[in-house]
Length: 208
Image (cartoon, rainbow, N blue to C red; front, side, top):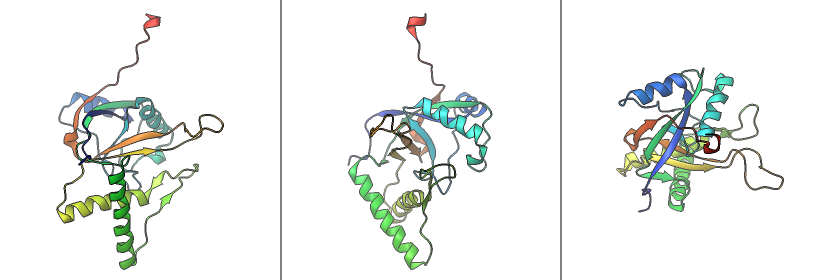
C-alpha cells in the first residue's frame, strides 16, 4: 500500500566524463545495469540519493583503484557525475517495515533452498584493505530472490530498491553519525528514470 513514494528523487551516478557526456547527449541511452554478485541492493542501475559529492568521490576512488571496478565497465580516466530525475515507482524501500519483512522472508526462502540443494549460502565479505562489508554477496542474493519469487508467483515486480547504509568513521569522538553514511538507489525499471542532467555547481553569490 505504501510502496510507491509520492515524489521524484534526484540520483547521482559516478562514472567517466565520456560516459556522462554520452548519456546526457543521447535521450535514448541509459547507464549500464550492474550485475555483480556482490551488489548491495541487487542488480540494476545505481545512484547515490541527493549526493553528487559522494558520486564524484566514488568515481575518483575507482580511477585510483581500477581493480575495484565492475567487469566490463569502461575505466575511469576523468571522474564525472551524471544526475537523474527518478520516479522510484513500486519500490522495495528498506527504510520501511513492510519491505524489511519481505527481505527477511526472502532470506528464509534462500536458506531453505541452499539447504535442500546442498549448496553454500553466499556471504557478505570484508573487502581487502577495509574493515567494512563492501562485498555484499549475501544481501545481493537475498534481494535477487525477492525478485525471483515475485516473478514466479505472479506478484508485481519491484521497479527499484532503496536502502540506507551506515559506513565510514564517526564524524567526532563518541558520535553515532558516520562520515560515509548514505542512501543508495538501485533502479531495475529504466522507465523510472525520467531524465539525465549535468549537476550544477553551487553559486557562491558572495564572490560575485
